[in-house]
Length: 368
Ligand SMILES: [Fe+2]
Ligand SMILES: [Fe+2]
Image (tube, rainbow, N blue to C red):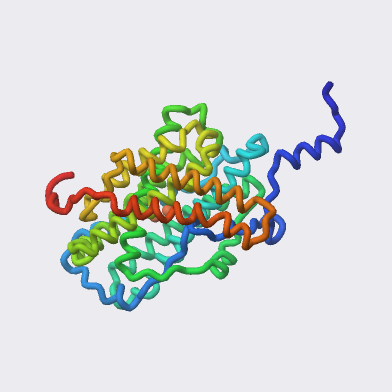
C-alpha cells in the first residue's frame, strides 16, 4: 500500500539525504584532517626566490606563454545542464558525492593558496617563476570555485576563508614541494582524463555534469605538471644524486598509496559512475608512474604483484581502524586495539619502500 502521509514523506527524505555537520546553515564543517586528507603546504620562499633557473629559462618562458594564453578562460561556466535538482542522487551515493567534491575542492584550493603565495613572494626576485605561479593560482581558483559551486547543488558549500585559517600547513623545502606538487598535478591529470574517457564511452554513467568539464580541466593540470617538470630540469641537482632517488621513491609511494587507500575506501562512489575503483586506481598509478619517468631518476615497479599485495594489506588494516574508530570503546582502549594495524601499515610501507625501483635516469635525453 502506498502511503501518502506527508510526515512520513518528510522522514523518508531526511533519511535519504545524509546529514552533514554544519558551521552555519549550508556551510559544511570541513572533513577532519587525517594522514589521508589533502594537505596544505608552505615553503622556504627565500630559497625559492634565489633559485637559478637560467639553464632551462627557454622552456619556462614557453610554459609561461601557454599560461598567459589562458585556454580555459571560458570553460568553467555553469550552463543549463546544472539547472535542475539533484535530489535523485540520494542516500549513500549523495554522501559519497559530497565527499568527492569536498576532497577535490580542498585539494584544488590548497594548490591555489600555495601558488598564490609563491607568486606574491617571488614577484620582485624571480619574475618568470612568480608569474607562472600566479597564473597557476588563477587556474586552481577556478577549479576550486567550480567544485564549490557543484557542492551547492547538494545544498552544501565550503567556507574557503575558514579553511585557510583553520588548516595546518606542512612545511617542505622547495625540492620537496616540487616532487610533491609535480606528482599531484600529474596524478590529477590522469584521474580527470580517465574519468572523462570512461564517461565518453559510457554516457549512461554520466549522472552529474561536472565530469563533462574534465577534458579541458585536466589540460590545466597537465600544464601545471609540465611547469614543475621544467623547474626540476632547471635545477638538476635535485634529480641527480642518490638522495634524489630515495626521495622520489618516497613521494611516488606516498602519493600512490594515499590515493589507493582513499579510493578503495570510497569504491561505491566510483561504482556510481560505472568505474571499478581498483581498476581505475591501477590504471592511474601505471600512467602517472610512466609519466614521472620523464623527469624522476627512478619509477616504482608497480607491475610487481607484491606491490598491490602490500597495498591490499593496508586496505584491510584501514577497514579495521575505521571499525575501531566507530566503536564505543574509550580512547586509550581504541588506541591499543588499533596498534597492530598501525604497525602492520608501517611494515607494509617499509616493504613497499624497499622494493627495487626501476632506474630511468640513464634514459635521459631519449624519447620515453
Ligand atoms: Fe587544479
Ligand atoms: Fe593544478
